[in-house]
Length: 28
Image 1 (cartoon, rainbow, N blue to C red):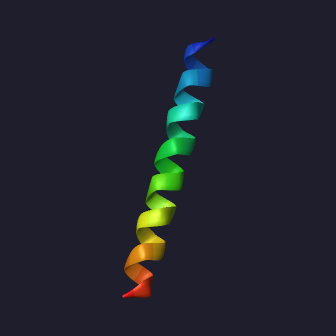
Image 2 (tube, rainbow, N blue to C red):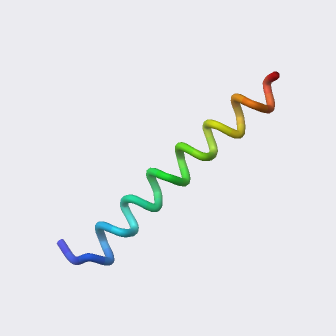
C-alpha cells in the first residue's frame, strides 16, 4: 500500500469522526 493510500484512509477516518462529533453537538 502506498503512502497516499494510507493518508487517504486516515483522512476518511478523521472526516467520519468529525462528522459524528458535529452531529452529537447539534443534538444538544
